[in-house]
Image 1 (cartoon, rainbow, N blue to C red):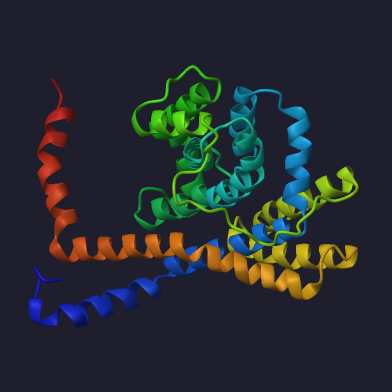
Image 2 (tube, rainbow, N blue to C red):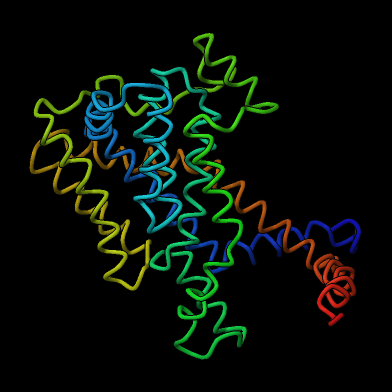
Length: 315
């Protein structure tokens, strides 16, 4: 803003902030991520994530198996990358901690599985969003956006290559490099979390369900509901996670796992946890708006275009 008009910097920053916050995409992200944090907090408070982790502890017998399990679970929850990342990281950290896997590696496995699988599976929020972009920009005919998207899936190199690399990391065929190598060395010395990192604490009195089968059901049903509800409402994860929160609160309330006040407090705490990553996303969109005002986007396009024309010209 100082480069554009130093005398109007404050007004322009305020204007950009308002434009970003009123953007439909930003509003969707804030609501989805906030409510997703609330849903995970309810699962945590009800002991369901602990029950699921305890069940996996009996299935996973080695460090590589814990990494591979993280990867496979990430493949299964393909409806949305936000749901994928939050749910898998919350449920797997106890297992990976037990095998001295650094939180950095867990974060890499979760994040680098969530986005690519949502790109490559055409029944996801990513596919719906991008198919609408294809139609809006006249790349595809109205109603044919999803068909055009499906045709492009074989050429989505990022998704295929990233998943392949994550799989190689999970089975131990890809060596740790740089900062990841240091993080893994630290984890092998019984410090899985980086210095200064703290776990999100939704209550020290959380216990797994006394009936392991019921504990597993209490975890899986709230995971299935947002997927089913999202599909019912046209792959709208916002509707899906809203339905899932209402369902989970009622489901746990009937079982009297925790009080209703504690469940609503958990939703509030979960939303608070998501404020920092949401602030980062909002800051990124504000930076994009500033770059657009500076003409950076057009500058990059005009700089790259001659090379593109040269590389695509017939020999």
